Image (tube, rainbow, N blue to C red; front, side):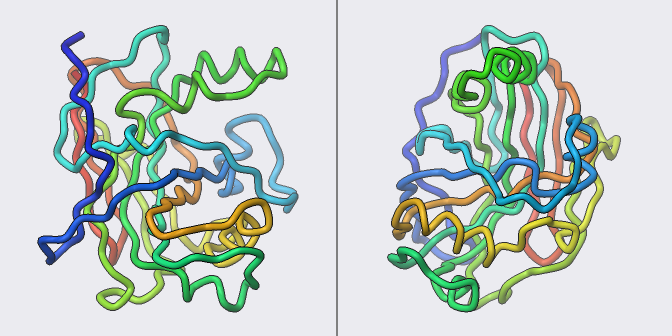
Length: 226
């Protein structure tokens, strides 16, 4: 494994010279019914749950990502990413869209074997989810440019073979619902990113794999595992 390139914790903004400084990263677990089933759960509409990644796990579109240590089962999870642009605490679902700056395509890289071991031991998922280069994120497109995507294809291919292929409309909890729920636990603020869950089809990666993925109306991402 080569040296890890330390990221500057910003995400490019499409069509602008500006960048989006990342403050925190929240991730929603099991927000698509088919993925919930493939991970051994059921799709009952329980309250959403969240885990976090550090801001400097963000990786720019087009990057080469080192295969992480201490795992033999690295998985891809394609996700819609929400970029928060305003302060908000205990907000309503109806007003949640007002705090969104824009959207991006993200990949939640996961050490699946470590996650499985953590679940079995009743321990946190930090070592499985929160590691160097584990949050590749495409350029952010602003709400002014695309509005609020609630439906549309979300997909990921490994070496040109499509592995994940779903629709944003299949989310168990919509983006406004998820943001409103997070805001009851802690105040959201500009710079926060929210990864909104992944559709079915997650799978293993090896060194040399090239991932491409996209979301209709939002953009595409390309990442290579070294």
